[in-house]
Amino acid sequence: MPTGRVAGGLLMALAVAVGEVAAQDVDRIWGRVETISGDTYEGFIRWDRNEGSWVDVLDGSKPVPRDNYRIWIRAMEGEEVRRVRTVELMGFRISWEESDPEFPSWAEAGIRFGQLRELKVTGPDAALLLLRNGQEVEFARGSTDLGEDLRELVVEDATGGTVELGWRDLDRIVFEGHPAVAAASARRLYGTAEDRWGNRYTGYVAWDLDEILTSDILDGEEGRRDRQVPFRRIAAIERGWGGARVTLEDGEEMVLDGSNDVGWGHRGVQISDPGLGLVNIPWDEFETIRFHQPDREVGYDAFDGGRPLVGTVITRGGESIRGAILWDADERWSWEMLNGSFRDVEYDVEFSRIDRIERLSSRGARVTLRDGRVLDLEDSNDVSDDNKGIFIAPEGFEEGLGPEETEWVLVTWDELDEVRFEHD
Image 1 (tube, rainbow, N blue to C red):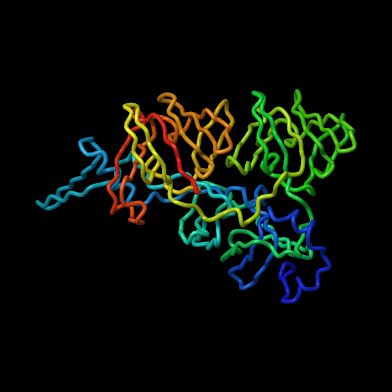
Image 2: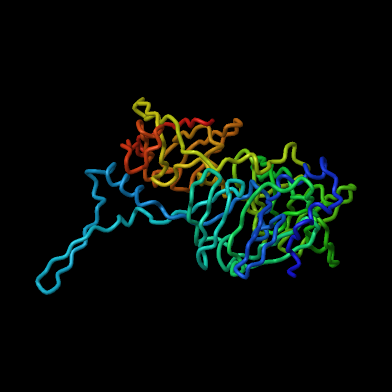
């Protein structure tokens, strides 16, 4: 029998105390993994090594609905956006319309695991996502989270046994909150990181885009001696010249170098910030991190699968338009991500966490979060004049009309002053 299979009465037999232990693990991804060979494994899930919490983000690309292109075409009437192709064959002329090359058929996307109900593998690098609101979204390409580049999917059952699976093994994953009697063998890393500009981010940590659990190991050399330090013993890490200063929980300090965990080759510090989204801090921009317990763990019940974006768009001419919002002719759900960067720190900001967006210039925008934090972002078509437009449906959105049935108003980036989002 596969080592990860959960027998019918297994959970009943566990001698695990309910209460403090269970509360410590509500933030961990739990699900039932069904394989193409017919085996089923249920337990805590570690995805592609660097995701293990509900607030972590599944990365990929999503197809841009054809309806979005039609909305864009109608709104851009008068502009040279249609591309008509013509060929002549044996005296006949054949013409057809192609999509504008500036309008992509696929877009980078990300979604927090807590928004998912199911993931169904549909191809070598593709999956169909069923969200908790009933919406279905196709994800594919462009990420080690999907496809044969998946580094591994590890399932830890309620007894602490594990099984490692590859993309080719997977058929379907059903996500749900974990049973009260299940306790993980290790906790998710959590802490507060600071970049060299003084900005701080608190959330679930992926160190070097690889280590995410207290049982994971920090590798390095102290002098010429190899050191391997479990993260559960580490209180803080500070970047230094060519290495890092590591402070342990008991106060001991050591200076480590000689590995990608603490120096050259480090892939960055990733923070899954519950109140923001995802922050990627390159090693050169990283200053220090302090590990600590979260004030409140974010469980599966904190997510609803997302809602349509609704708000008020204010133009530079002073006009206010309230309605459903289609951002950059691409994002129209609260689970989607606004992308940008500042001083090489990259941000994926979940729209559900955004209070308002203000245009600063042709190259950037100011994003105010619902918790009051302010981000000045650039280097993305989401927050620059590469934005394909902010579309508003003043009528029909509350009746649940589809994009093609709704009349949309276009506000270009040059015309935009700010957007104020509404949240339930």
